[in-house]
Amino acid sequence: MLTKLHTNKRLQRLLGLLAGIAFGFLLQKGGVTNYDVILGQLLLTDFTMIKVMLSAVITGMIGVYALRSLGLARLHPKPGSVGTTVVGGLIFGVGFAVLGYCPGTISGAIGQGSLDALIGGTVGILLGSWLFATFSPKLQKPVLSKGDFGPLTLPEVFMVNAWVVVIPAAVTLTAFLFALEHFGW
Amino acid sequence: MEWLRMQQWSPYAVGIGIGMLSWVTFVLSDKPIGCSTAFARFSGMIERAFRGDKTLAKPYFKQYVPDITWDVMLVIGIVIGSLASALFSGQFQLTWVPTLWAATFGSAYFPRLLVAVIGGVLMGAGARWANGCTSGHGISGTLQLAVSSWIAVACFLAGGIVTAFIIFRVFGA
Image (cartoon, rainbow over all chains, first blue to last red):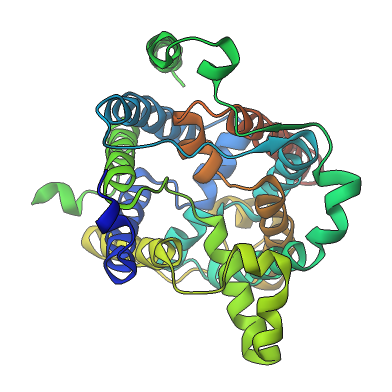
């Protein structure tokens, strides 16, 4: 683990910028910075977004778990609860379809000149994030803490070696992508 | 360098590239790619400009300090990277209303902007509520096989698909 590098704040800012440039370039080349492509996915007429996401997940999963086995990376699974993950996820989904971008792709949409992303969407996201930041202490007890299950991963749930899940997951997701192509989506 | 000027790459090439980028961020920065935290930090920076250091006393901003961090730079980088890609391919264009929206609801810019603000508020709040977005949960969390992320993605898609059908197949029909 490159702990010295991880704690170098200035260098991390530069690395964040460079990773962002690569990510933004890829998102734009993938077409997923377009409202039409994202709504096409949600209307189940254009499967570009799912293809990008699942191939990223398969590649990332094998690599990150390999790096972890080699002692070069550690995992950061997010904690979850019914009150945060399910309730927040559904609110996010509604907003995702109404706006037509997500926090990553809206940044890319701004880069390619979409003014509804820059002027409408960004103002909304900043306001929404600020509202949650301000009112989340009040939501903690009645909603957010309900049904807490913590930062669990699937190999921990099944109590098996991680690769027992990684390999079947990679095979299943790859088969799903082949099926999408086979049926002409 | 013809591939830099291409308008679109295969979604699989793009996905594999994003997956490999996540290897790099895990090793060099000990961080999964995620975009919604940065927007919370930006909102804190704006509040701080008006209210001063009282902002920093809010519990949320104690946890997510409104500072220029790795994730804030990531989001700034996305704008630059996408701009570069769009300039190389000649796709950069200032547009007010997306094509699909214009074909269904007309090309007036005010309705689209209003709807974008409303959608943004819901999505911004939802992302922080769920503790992640389409990148933080949808790609980085699922690739770590996090239970929270697989549930979050199912909820993103369920909420998104139902809402998209209501907007375009009910109101837009």
